[in-house]
Amino acid sequence: MNPSDDIILLECAKCGGQMEVPALAARLEPRCGSCGGQMLAVAGLELGQLPRAVLPTERERENMTIRPLEVSRMELNPGQIKQPGFRAAVAHTTDERVAREAGTVRKKKRRRNAAASYPGWDPEAERERYGLSRGARRAMVAGLVLLAIAVPAGVYFIIQQLNKQVVVPVPKPPSKGSSVYPVLMSSDLGRVNERLKAFLGAPTVEEMMKHIRDPERLRPAITAWYARHPYQPTAWKKLPQQEEMVLYNSLLVGVFDAEDYSRRPVALERVAGDFKVDWECFTGWCEVPWEEMGEKRPTTPVILRCTVGVSDYWNLDFQDSKKYSCLQLKSLDGQHTLYGYVQKGSPLELDLALEMRMQDPLLTTLRVKFLPNGTAKNQVEITEKVARGWVLTGAEK
Image (cartoon, rainbow, N blue to C red; front, side):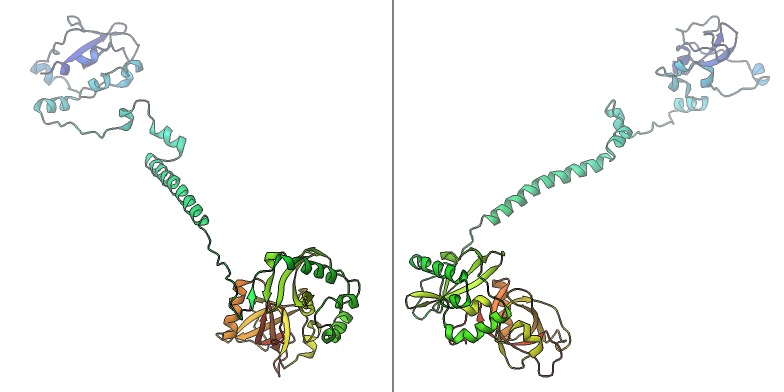
């Protein structure tokens, strides 16, 4: 029999109380649960010895009640319970001891505890500190690593795209019969600027008419125009530069910056070695003034110089959004608005759509008319695109 299974009778040196404990527990010098005195082995036994307890005879066994071996923690000093080996010594009952002797008790397999593998590591404290489990933290770290790789790669890709050289087609020299050539000779730039300064700063209408082309033909239109719009010189901040001028059918076309921060179109025609200003383009002149379009409502096409943008106003005379495309037509000063309609899928609609992609807002010259039986004062049908921009040649007029 294993010596650690022997039973030893202990007696309190102070009050005389006795208790039976395993021999291994007796080596821990337990104390009495009643008075706290030291428990000593019964006379004839020393703590260093491991003899078996004296078994009772058959007659004594018949006259006595055998109780299971039980050692209460309350009978011992709490400090002794924490000593190594004590819990294991008092945990075995008589039945367990017999079963172990017979070899029928199997040891339980215990899962390895992380706290035992890493001394001082407290999983609960770590979870409270970071708010995440170890698996969640690992996933978060892996995500951060992937993000750290993806962000520089994305930035590098964007930089490469931005650094790609944009190929701009260089205009070729005009062939015979070509009408558009975006070049102004440097020798002509000085005369163009002098003419523009004289035209914009003219103190009177008569002085201004000395700098325009076709003054006699336009005299009635000019008189009617300035009857509605009192004349005053135009202040400017920046005149067109050489690279901003375009030669269009013998007309130099450009844009200058006015004092009110607006950009105004301007065209000049070469006449007898000099340049004259196109007054119709400068003022955005129309056959029917913008102020009178809603009242006169012409049913025959008239020339309208305007800026064009996309709109979605289908009402009154034009309600079918599947049949018509709606465009917003505005005057040069932005004070007057008409809604123009063109049939969807027509060559005119495709032409205007292409022009609006190339220029925003689109300056163009149209022919428009009101419906014969129409009731709206601000809805017109677009019948023709006369010219891109506001400059008209003799054939277009």
